[in-house]
Structure formats: C-alpha cells, structure tokens
Length: 343
Image (cartoon, rainbow, N blue to C red):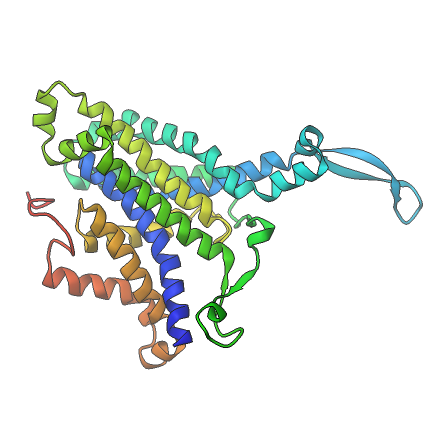
C-alpha cells in the first residue's frame, strides 16, 4: 500500500505539469483554433524566468572583509549581493532564497507580453490556414526560441534551488498511519501539486464566473455571433493567448527546482502534452486536466521496478499505448466535442 501511495504522489506530480501545459494548449486551440507547437517553449521560458531572476538577485560586488584573511594573512575579498545592500543582510538573503516563488511575479508580465507578441506578430496570420501549416510554423518558432535560450544560457542544466524551508522531505506515511520513513516525499513536489491545483482552479473560475470569461466561452462556441453583437472577440482572444502563455510560464517557473532548466525541456514536455490534449479531447479544458493527471499516474505506476520486470520498457510507451486504446474506443478523446478538428 505504501508503494501504491508513493506512485500516486509521483503521478500527481507529473500530472500537474502535464495538466498545466495541456490546459494552456487547449485554451489556445479552443479560442483561436490554432495548434500551437511552440507552447512547450513557453514552459521552458518560464523556467528560465526563474533562472534569470535568481541571477539578477545574486548580482554582487566585491568588498574587503578585514575580519577574514587568506592563508598569507591578507584581508579577503568577498562578494556582497546588491540586494543585501538595499534591504540588509538578513532580508537580502531571504529574498535570494525565495527567488523561485518571487519569479512568479516576475514571469507573469513577461509571459503575457511574449504571448501577445507571438499571437499578433506571427500566429494571427495562420488562423485560417490548415492545421498542418500551424504545426510547422509554431514548431519552427519553438526551435528558434530553444536556440535563443541555448545561446543565452548555455547547453547545460542550471540548478535552481527551492527555498530552504522546502528542500527537505515530508514523512507522508506517518500522517496516514504508516511506519516512519515508509513514504518519504519532497516538500517542493507537494508544493508544485498544490500550486497546479490553484492555477487550474483559478483558470476555470475565471472562465466560469467573470464576464470576460463568459464572453470568451461564448466566442469559443460561436465566434461569428459574438462578433455580430459588437464585441471585439479578437482582442479578447489575444488576451487569452497571453494568459495561456502565462499559465505555461508559471508551470515552468515552479518546475525549475524539480528539473534543472535546460534549453530542450520544452520539447521534452511538448509531445507528451499534446498526447494529453488529444486523449482528453481537443478543445476540452476539463478533458485536458483529467487526462493530464490520469496519464501522469499511469506513467508513474509503469515506472515501478515490479512492472518493468514483467514488461521491460513499458514506462517509455505507456502514455502512447493508453492514447491508442482510448482513441480507438473514443475517437474524440475522453471529453471531446463533436466537430472539433473533424472538418
């Protein structure tokens, strides 16, 4: 039972990332009808927003510390971050330690601007083009963004630590009545799951309970009729593209301590996220979230040594195998709508 609970926790962790990326993909497809293969790159850029803020906060200058000497007895030169000069040593150290959560505030405007520029500068010209054209141009854009990040930050992963208070592990088993050390799970992965749940809930609440969201949902169902009512639906859809980019960016920011950011991490998640979208049903937001967590849990169980001993390599293909089975039995996905991508 403890192994099962541990794999469920691992699945929720993976599923959180899949669900957040798939949610943004589905928002873009549902509003604009665009298959955006550059969405994984937005996840990557979000992770590098965390890297960038950490580097900005750790910018420093050298001062001579008379209280410390080297082996020759000369005073040592030490690096003092500018943020400590501004806020004091203790407060400055705390700000640096919490750079990843603070990167949430830093990344939101950055990702919205990037999303709006992408949509206005390139993607709007492909609204009425075939989906194959959209895939090719957005995949090309993803490669360009990936190479830009590689040029700016290098090819090696960049460790981005979580705040010190979340670097340990929680004895989750004790909370459920198991023996001590039966189920040990990292704090930050639990934080990531809780963060994903909040973001997913906020997106659904925004679409369901705000006037802006109601208009967007109406535009997703019947764009022409909403336009005839005098509503500038194109502007709202552009804003939604920016918000979808922000969702992907936030997913990347909080994932940075789990998987050190590297230039190809967007591509690593992109294909899996598209499988999630297709399994959940193209254009279905609840389907994207459901499929994200479902496939994350299945992938986690398939990675167990007991399962791999019986079916070697199953952890590498389980998501695609499940996708094939679901699409053979439900061609529109778990919660897909009739007519979506069926023209």
